Image (tube, rainbow over all chains, first blue to last red; front, top):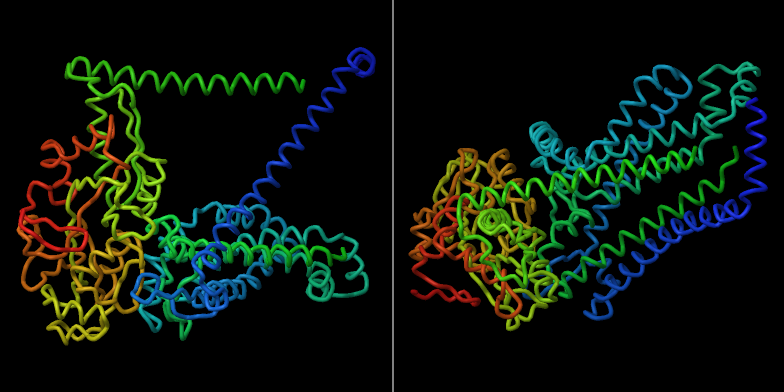
Length: 308
Length: 308
């Protein structure tokens, strides 16, 4: 009976409403194409807008691009204004790489635990906890950093608490879920035959993980790290609250520092459209975008190298 | 089946919209009823423009928003939206005509890229500010010279200015901040502050100064409402409405509301309301500002002080 109704409905669709069906196809296709076009248009529009705004400081205000990128003197409001953003580029890259350095082993370790050692506990306890971490807004991380971490650093380590170090700690916690989630997916997507083959050859579980699974998943694991770095690089609010936001290149990890994002968020609202300082802030935005593109290119390159 | 789901979804959507609209309608209805029974003097606004947008200085936002709320209670057909975003953004947007009133804590003349002649200044209140000192420093009075020495880094220990033996930690504002501009101009006689922790939000500055031994920053007077920070006297003069009004205490700035050309319609009525006794004698002092009526001195954009 059920079979009959299915076949008859298929028959109806094919014979009686052929026209409708074709329109359905067209409509569906139009819908998803529109979505894709909007996405692409938004990306291109943002890029063009940022480039147009960000290049003004070089073409309209005649700031020398090399000096802008390499000078360490940032003094936009003084008598002899100078616009050198090297300390902020340095700060951004420093917090990004240092936090990735800490988050990578932790995240990948947790991923291996979740996929290889204790999948049940991993799925039931660890995964929800990590997903919860992703959902915490960055301002909360920043505030906890400000009231808990900074005083702790001040009391037990050199400096006044506000430091590159505090920024790295906050960012590490923030990017850890990203790294762990992607790394876990990478480990889980490895074919079981790899594990079985390795164990059949007499390898222990740890040997299997170290010699077979990690090398096989390496491109995906690197992708996880790079995506974590991209998030760290773009984070502004949480870092701003703990890093101190000074314009000097930090002499040690316990010195205050600043990143491109924190300088932009601190200043952009106070500056007027079209002023030199406003334009230089837009240029920082453009540099952030370019470095993000580089991160994406690295990710594409890495996923292209995936063997499994 | 698919169609069913879609129609159910649409129905739910319509329901939600309907409920929201009903809620909005109800609230409006209640308000107007209340208004009818309360005061008969409603709806006196210019019918040509019943909604305006105000944006700019985040420090001014609570004051103007509170006034707007009170104004809308009496004039239910008026719709006044008050946003923050920074003085620079406020001035830029009012200049290009995208908002009706732009709030700023500095004179438009002081901002690059703003044609001050095209804007009309409405000074709605005065904000006083002074140095905020961590209680552990043991200092509650600084001479102007000492203040400058502390902020330029000439003096690095509180014992040198009569306090405890404790290192001085500076808490600055971003270069472009109006609070910083005012403090530097009238507190530090234009001297450039040495590098220190830089934060934009007054609450964060208060938190840091309160928590960090030996820290000093600067805050508007409304933030000195508990014992976590010390309100510094300058040359023995305490910052109060009286000392600011008489011109004895130097560090203060106008809170400006700019319009493009002379204010008209609702914008004009709202600005008149801001300067009315109703606002000047209640919200303005309540929020820690000095009412315009208390000011016996005047200051122009160049900083020249004259008796009113």
